[in-house]
Image 1 (cartoon, rainbow, N blue to C red):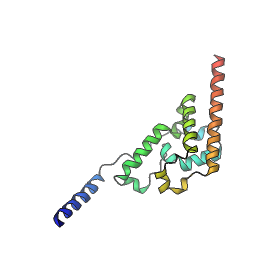
Image 2: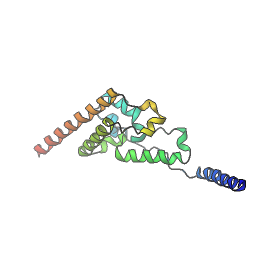
Image 3: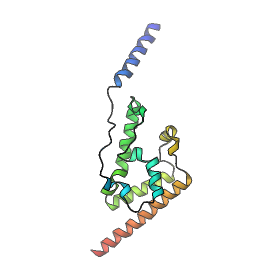
Image 4: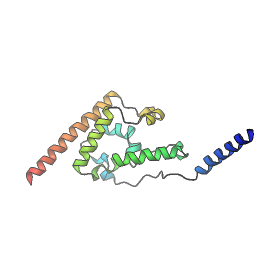
Length: 162
């Protein structure tokens, strides 16, 4: 029985060590600062600061990769979350989107922040400093709602001019 346990332990440790050589990419794509949400004129400074602190690691091309993101299998979980986050909303490509897509992103941001689904609970567990206060949730929600209305009015105005 001891031989089997020892064999299983050796195989397990070997597998973990070998897995360290197979890693997902942790590179941040290059970005055009003119397309970033930072260049977006209608975002209040305090909302931008909150998004940078609590959202940019998964929802921008400016991810700060922590030391443990180099360890398999954790790196696959983190890379998967970052890639999914960037596909859903990418603040580094905010200005590249059409107004209708921005409106959808704003609605998603409002919904998920208001329902406290973002930041993800597993991210908050490791990074408690990114938790959103009630005031920050209200500020993000107000900005997202106001911006949706502004974009809708802008789109309506453009359509009337045609």
